[in-house]
Length: 471
Image (cartoon, rainbow, N blue to C red; front, side):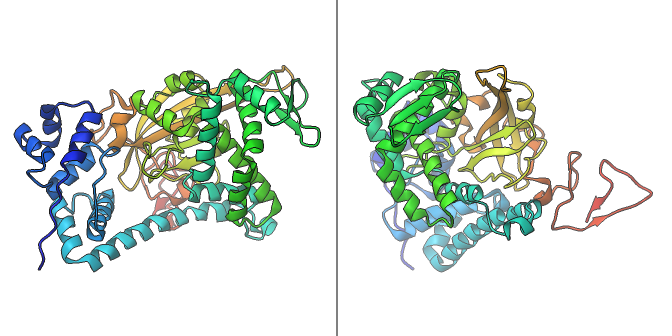
């Protein structure tokens, strides 16, 4: 049996330590080794062991990337990631996963494939919600255009590389040395480069563009951040039309309405990428530990726009923290949603009533935080804030909703809203689910419906919080 190839990664380890601003002694303490041993590792005198690789992944989940060079090394990394699922608790040690990948590559690959299929099956189970909540007689069982576009963004992991890079390039031209293009630079580019006349006037909606006359009207009653975003949307839809159209063409959506909705959605995406250019925004987010208010102030964006942009930082080789993001209205409907984490949202209807975002809707301009645990044992730190978007007129009611942003506790050190939380306490986490119809918890006092895949028992002589027991 051939020996496992030893991994010497001194430069990568040294770069990681310096990027984290740690001295050798501090880094060694985090890894549970001595400073002389770390020095030998950094100098290339000692190889990294499987146990050390596991510790590095846990201590630096966002920054550490194994310098894998061969297929078997990549398989070991994929196996470690799959085995880290709470479903398996502490079944596998670092040495065992490395040994399996080396000695039983066929089995290891099958395990990784099976775990991926398990994750996909969990997501498909949520379609039960859709099937039960949508009247099939109206839609013929097919997705509506907005549902098709929503699912397209989800499958794209909410990151559209050609549009994002094109917007970042345009931002560099307009930023004038600032972190984000100022509003006058956007206005000047619309007028001079795209021959668009611009007017701020009421009674034309939020934004109205006459393509034949090249005339754009923006509602002056919008908050400054919203006016700037509408300008950026129009600029992106014109200046990046070819890039956006190519993505729409490659999406193979069924209807013209879906394709038009996707064009609008991609223009909004490009506007966010223009105002918060990827590399500059990612660096600022890391430096501020994802403090939304600081980032919004630095880039001139709204709280919601900033949260949404953080959920899109999934560029290969330069990923941000994997966040989930959603927007919930006063009725509990999820009107925006994306997750780069294992947490998935109900496709229709409201989210779990135990989730802090529902409380945040009723308390505007106050940030609430929560440590939550889903039925699969994964814990999340989430932040939620209620927002009121003014209408600019007494005759139109302001829009009230809440946004939520969160990550798995493995990234809590990067998320300022986790400060002060007891992440290790067994009782500190609120038990939440995706939706009642697919939540397996049988002891939840907030359950609205029984789970769709389990029987119920009704006892006329006994009444609990709900009038049935889950089988």
